Image 1 (cartoon, rainbow, N blue to C red):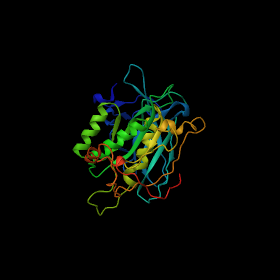
Image 2 (cartoon, rainbow, N blue to C red):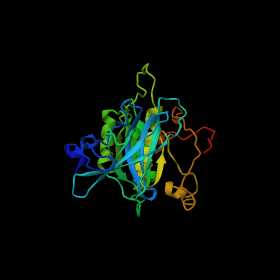
Image 3 (cartoon, rainbow, N blue to C red):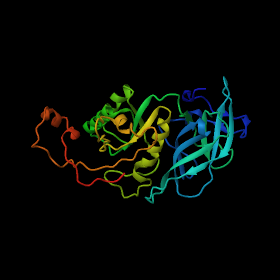
Image 4 (cartoon, rainbow, N blue to C red):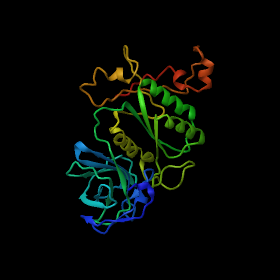
Length: 328
């Protein structure tokens, strides 16, 4: 059965939960789905890791104690019949310290077996028909990685329109070693959409439509309070982490105005920079400083200065940084 064929609902005839329905038309990998009728919890994506015998679900929930149950949907080979198992989930809620109504959440669903379910749901009562059905993606460690470095970008918002900035950010990071970009999109302008389409067709960028189901900041500012911190940034970065596990060895988390520049002899890219430490280290924390965009360098002359200014290439025009270096 293909989930996008909009086939009729399937009634489960075997397993731990007989009589509940599987609705393939609910599956949409661009949307968030509620867990309960009161909409205190939502889920977005699901990832299977064979070595952990778990499925990890990215979502958001209110900061209240609740019991949640994972429903594992197994499909029989060459058959439309579904088999369902259940197990209570473990809820991980990284405290973002912002006192918002919702916080990013990871639902951990232990399997007890190495068999990956085709789909998974989160419910609050045993054997209830779910309001969400997520396709499970296998992100177990591969024999070899497709990419060395993948870059995760926090959500673009407020009809983001600085196409020059986005192109400069992508191209400089490619020079430094990036081979894949995962970009979360709340709202972007037509010119930025064209840039994203260009890179997507070339297999460099994966655009995730980030249609959050709770109130976020707006421009002009609304009187209604926002319900999740910074456009669900933590959930987006966690989604990107799991989404990239199966194909990328390292993950780089930077914003559009941030660049990781190697600083040492014969270090020209990220591979050079981590080479002395890569065998013993899995995580790299970096010191940082600010290059102020308002500081002008009009007195400095360089080749192709007119073209660089025309293309608004900030990283080729700003040379001086603040004296303060922030710790890792």
